[in-house]
Length: 151
Image (cartoon, rainbow, N blue to C red; front, side, top):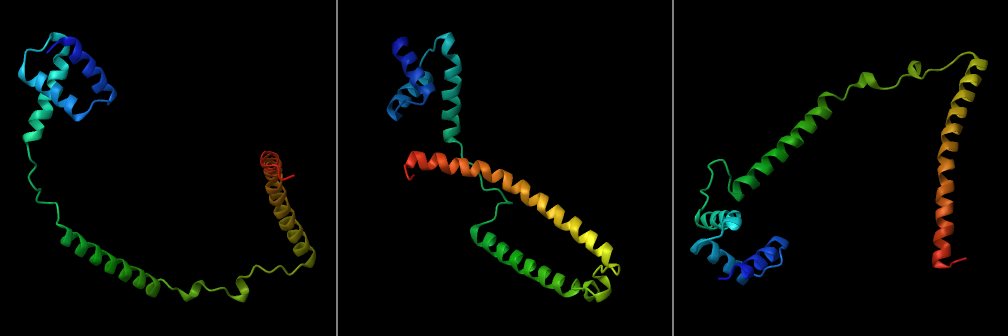
């Protein structure tokens, strides 16, 4: 077969645009004939694919069948349920419940007022930071309305 036609087919093969018939032509060319030196790498590719086509893989002993896998999943789900149940039963510690003594009450009214002001100021700062990001959302809605022409 002429070298020019094979090189055009190889270009299409490299781009992934060949049909199965064209690939069979290439395979036959590289497996059954004398190949020019600059195309030896393609010959190796087609020889390797032909060799791999005839090989079969034996079933590995550590691969389970579908029934065993399903059985394994059911046992792991039962084990997970048992672990969660035992965790809830044994680690449900009643000493962690809140007592009236643990509420962190402040007996001094002025100190309590100052702590409350500090807490509310901190919450206000976080709210204002979140509000600053809403300006971008407002601008986005204006632009969207112009595009959709809702205004």
